[in-house]
Amino acid sequence: MIELYTAPTPNGRKISIALEEMGLPYEVHAVDLAAGAQRTPEFLAINPNGRIPAIVDRDAGNFPVFESGAILVWLAEKCGKFLPAEAKPRSEVLQWLFFQVGGVGPMQGQANVFFRYAEEKIPYAIERYQREVRRLFEIYDRRLAAHEYLAAGDYSIADMATWPWIISHDWSGVTVDGLGHLQRWLDAIGARPAVRRGMDVPRRWNPNPDIQKFVGAARKMLV
Image (tube, rainbow, N blue to C red):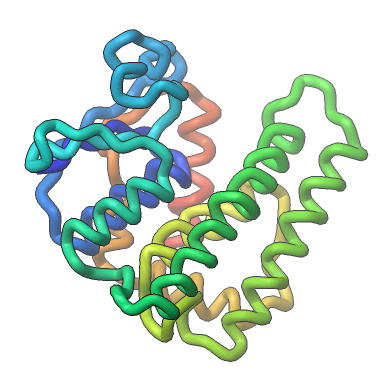
């Protein structure tokens, strides 16, 4: 059994999607971000950085894992799926996983901050991060022109990590117009039943209106 500590954000949904795809039993703990639940001593004992997602693997002596990329690798190795064992394809999956973790996630997150949340709208900052996000989207589009999935010729944790971010591009004010290969991939991943189930986790979430707007924007992309 996996205990999942999460909220309805792209990083949180990476893990709920993975758990659904892998068929691993899990229990959901919705973390109330607006109330500061991620900063309580109990949560910090699981993730010292005070961020979601985090898991506790009961089958491994209540072993805690934080950081979404590390969680995905842990779960993939646990179930023996979505991360190849052979060195080169495994490296390929990890390269694209780390590209998401270090690239589109942080850049799109900053685009969200300056475009949606900052009280002072700074055009330079908004344009800078939106332009960088679009540049990263174009890298994905070129990759997907020659590959059905991001890495190793098959659906993997790299796809699970990346899709929840790119599907919410409207929230960042970034378009995928003209990126036909990326759009094809978004549609294909979004049609997977496990992905749709994972997008509904947690079913009861933080009442923060900004989070609800974000959730609504992501859901619209699935219609």
